[in-house]
Picture 1 (tube, helix red, strand yellow):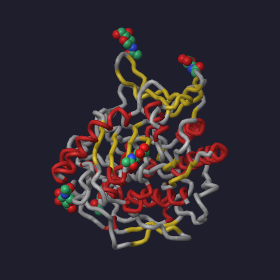
Picture 2 (cartoon, rainbow, N blue to C red; picture 1 turned 90 degrees about the vertical axis):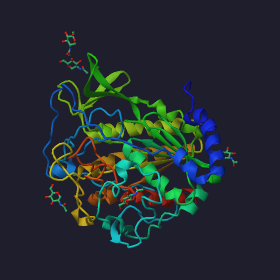
Picture 3 (tube, rainbow, N blue to C red; picture 1 turned 45 degrees about the vertical axis):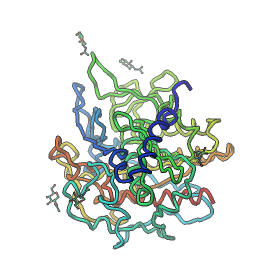
Picture 4 (cartoon, rainbow, N blue to C red; picture 1 turned 120 degrees about the horizontal axis):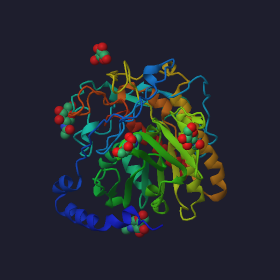
Length: 447
Ligand SMILES: *[C@@H]1O[C@H](CO)[C@@H](O)[C@H](O)[C@H]1NC(C)=O
Ligand SMILES: *[C@@H]1O[C@H](CO)[C@@H](O)[C@H](O)[C@H]1NC(C)=O
Ligand SMILES: *[C@@H]1O[C@H](CO)[C@@H](O)[C@H](O)[C@H]1NC(C)=O
Ligand SMILES: *[C@@H]1O[C@H](CO)[C@@H](O)[C@H](O)[C@H]1NC(C)=O
Ligand SMILES: *[C@@H]1O[C@H](CO)[C@@H](O)[C@H](O)[C@H]1NC(C)=O
């Protein structure tokens, strides 16, 4: 492909500089090389287009899913409700959970654990302002004192030393939206307790980044994509409309071009699909999300997410140059707005997890997760013949139980006072468990 690889272009010069400085002045270089991430939320209204449908449902408040994406150029921040929750989806069980251990790591509950988090906002210097909840004024700390307990076994705590040994000489990339980046930021904090990462590349918007751990020859990458496949906002007379065209059969080359170089890809997606979208395939419109046109098939968000993911996974399966890559799907990360949605004063000020019995097994979040797991299973079975490995980080259920883990009002929202972030996750916080899962699944995959 003609566009060159992100790392090859950018790695060398900056890495040399940072490495040399690292040797000379370890404390100085961290302030120079570890660029502070300062992300701001900017909310735009959807523009002149007609008001978006809000669907009532049994539990409208919890189901509201916003698209607050912490990017400086973000456009539409739209809250919608999943369209149809008449059908109670059944949980689809992944056929194979990775390796010979049979225990389902993702079925369990939260138990108190006074050990707290493995890092603080002092020991991790790369926490973005918007996720540094304590710095932004959050006072309760109990939400750090919980551990995930799978019903049938234990989930080992993240071990940074062990993890860095496992990924020695490897490249791991997160592919997705700002929640995907949130996971990367959590992993970065965990790993930085053992080796100070070097910031070797950052694009102007901080969407694509590369970090190096030179002592372990490990590269951590985040690759931005809204839909996994190509998608663009419709413009009318030079202004945005809030309506998108998404091309199911055109996988977004911005992330696929780096695929042959990667050992691990953690793929996730969904939040951008909660908006009016026309789905295109082979040059035809094959459906639309949040639309009302007699001649176009209306699709659920979960169907659209499944179509795009299926297409991305198929691409990976067919990629001849991507022999060694292990693909991990991180399932849908739920938001927790209460008493409204993001622009109607919705908040998330709980300070404790909820129990298993509080979770509605027919919730639309789990429906979305099911659509993702279904595609992953299809890819996994196809991949077996080709020697490709696909695994799942099935975090949806665990995170549904963590309404207490979001920044809420504490995300440093200078420009957006009164709005709450109930989508992303505080650092440190319950999102750190995603790396516990990651490590356990990687260990099973390699064994
Ligand atoms: C860490 O959090 C405390 C509050 O718990 C806050 O006062 C402090 O400014 C934060 N420090 C950094 C470096 O973020
Ligand atoms: C570092 O890892 C890369 C693969 O990512 C490998 O090609 C290279 O030889 C390794 N370098 C060292 C010094 O081990
Ligand atoms: C676009 O601009 C033209 C000329 O300024 C105008 O006639 C037309 O109505 C505009 N279209 C829309 C959809 O606003
Ligand atoms: C659906 O019908 C409208 C007008 O009735 C037309 O503008 C649109 O292009 C049609 N869409 C498709 C996919 O045929
Ligand atoms: C949480 O927010 C609601 C209003 O949205 C408020 O009534 C309640 O007191 C808040 N709880 C805490 C613990 O701040």
